[in-house]
Length: 334
Ligand code: ATP
Ligand code: LTN
Image (cartoon, rainbow, N blue to C red; front, side, top):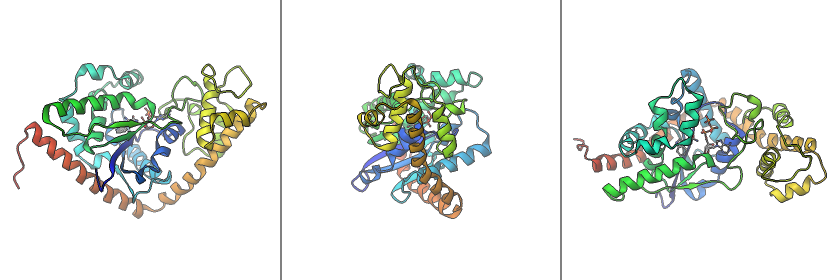
């Protein structure tokens, strides 16, 4: 608790270009949570180097992501937006929690299996212990809730298990966090293969809408989206292509699935795809504008980075010191 509010933590990797999946599944849901929670939104750059990164590119992407958080509507005065690498407690707690995590648990992580297959030439220890660092992120802030897309549920479960295990040995040190998965948009699928999630690391640029795509590109990509062999706009389990587009349109427009089906009753895929494209472009337009303004205001963004890293560092240290004491590290001499 901080100032009477429950704690909330989430993060995104600064790898690749942020997609519509990241926006609808995560970012968009983050915007209004600060009324109810004390929110920490991190750019998880330590996680990013589990796959090879070009240093200048990583630096640029990390800053762009932090600006995108703000451009998407997260108020940096009311939320703590910072880089994971600016708060050393993440890595320090990560190490300690590694010693409370079993290899059997890590072997079961599906994201590790997927990423190892994708990066077969670089299956490093960081990729393997990635979920433990994520647990450290969450537990460092005594988080009550963690808003994530559905793909992160397994990591959240592991975090809870690690926290519980630690608490069983040392008493109530960590708050046991709950996942908060938004009702809509939790799993946006690829436009080229609707059985796969839309992912920023997808090699085919037509599979994803990137948040920074311009209107024409967005409309073109939706026009080319793979759909099923039917012509009606109906939400159905066995029509994953059109179901995904209905999901996207529904979250972007704020209409229910039934309203969308009704609106396009008797119309064809062509009309529908155009409407989805236009609606998504309308949603993203103000974000582009705000992002451009922020890009030009270096001093403002630098000020946020500095102040928020200090705030996050202060809170993180409180948990870290407690944990260090519990496990038996010698006290600091002042
Ligand atoms: P990568 O392709 O590099 O693995 P990613 O696109 O899966 O990345 P992350 O940085 O791992 O993105 O995720 C950031 C947030 O976006 C997480 O909360 C995640 O659950 C959410 N998210 C990612 N992809 C989707 C998607 N297709 N639909 C809904 N939410 C998503
Ligand atoms: N693993 C997450 C990103 C992430 C995260 C976190 C999300 C790192 N640390 C803490 C929530 C809380 C991902 O790949 N999307």
